[in-house]
Each structure stands twice: as structure tokens, then as C-alpha cells.
Image (cartoon, rainbow, N blue to C red):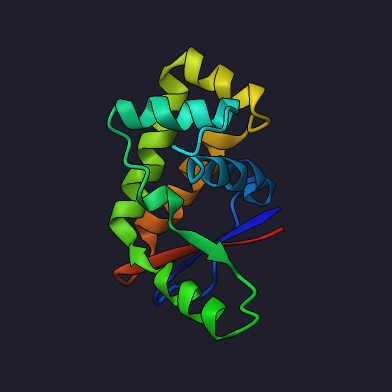
Length: 139
């Protein structure tokens, strides 16, 4: 899995450490909240949301390969406010760094590098130009 973060006006997209695999796993499971599935990363996302971490920006992403018009439309809809995404990633990293229970859930979910990947992605977004950014993945 590989996550790429694009920012309008940035000279190149950003790939977090470890190709963002832990972040892709987390955002994918976070998007599954409310469907009755049980996984450590879903539990983590629910707990973080209860603590005020905004999941909306983190669950707005799409496959980077657009195979048809519908994919191209959804890929375009993945653009979002750059600052809002940076804030959500910083909140995610901060929660994992401050709470051993949250960090344990990330480890149990196979996303040990999640805090570092989120912090690096937030740093890229904070320094990027433009107002919009998007997260795209490739499996």
C-alpha cells in the first residue's frame, strides 16, 4: 500500500515514511466505522473521534488510478481544505503520542508507524502552498 498526498501548487506530491502504509490502513478502517465491523483500527478511530479528532478529513481519500469517468469524478471530490487535513493529521499523531492505549491499538492493528507518518504528512501540508490537498492511495 502506498499513500500519496498532493497539495495544490506543491512542486511534487509527498509520500510519508514507509510509503504511508500504516496511514492507508488506518484511514481505510476509519472509513468503516459504523458498519458493525470490529478491528483495532476501527476501535482506535472511534475512540479518537470521541476525543474530538475530526475523522472527516482523514476519511476523504480515493484510489489514485482513475479507470473511468466515475473514478475521475470521485478523485476530484477527494480534494479538501489543506489546513483542515493538516490539523486532523496532527491531532491523530498527538493522540497516539500522548496515549499509550491508543498507541497499543495502532500496534495491534498493524499500524505501528502511524504517528510518525501522520506527523510527517501534517508537516508537508503545513509547508505546502495552496488551499487544497488530497490523499490518494495505491494498493
